[in-house]
Amino acid sequence: MVIILHNIRSIHNVGSIFRTADAAGVEKIYLCGITPTPFDRFGALLPQFAKVALGAEGSVAWEYKKTTLGAIKELKKEGFKVYAVEQNKKSVPYYKAKVKSDSAKVALVFGNEVRGLPPSILNAANKILEIPMVGVKESLNVSVSAGIVLYGLRY
Image (cartoon, rainbow, N blue to C red; front, side, top):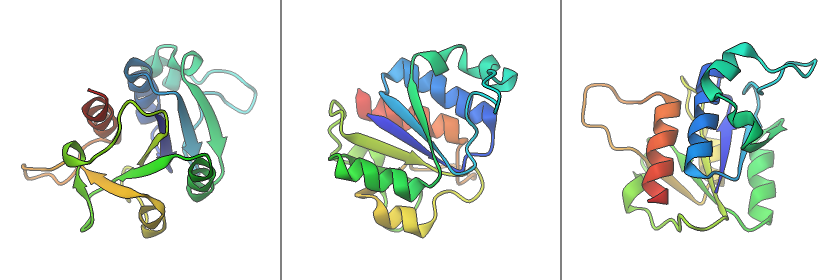
């Protein structure tokens, strides 16, 4: 299982997703667009990232990709099924999706904290998954969403 992060703004969210990905056994994280990487341009670990990730940048492989669509296209060529996580008319609850959680060929796409995932990425996905909301708020923090879906599909 791999994760694709589309234009995540907060380095704290990225660090938290790395830490959760390590715990859930994620193989690799693709950091796309404006999503920050763990290291600055000089190769130094960013303190804000390190504070949250607690070393997960060393245990979870990661790669920067300029575009999310490019990452999705590459993964599909490698046989991955791509699941976007977003509220949408076409989405299904993540726990009802027929996702082979033990398959190494699953890619989960999480989007920007404010804008989510654009139609182009939703259209490129094999399926759109959502976390049902019953409260007043219509969304969760992206790192919380990643944890729920990762563990929900894994176990």
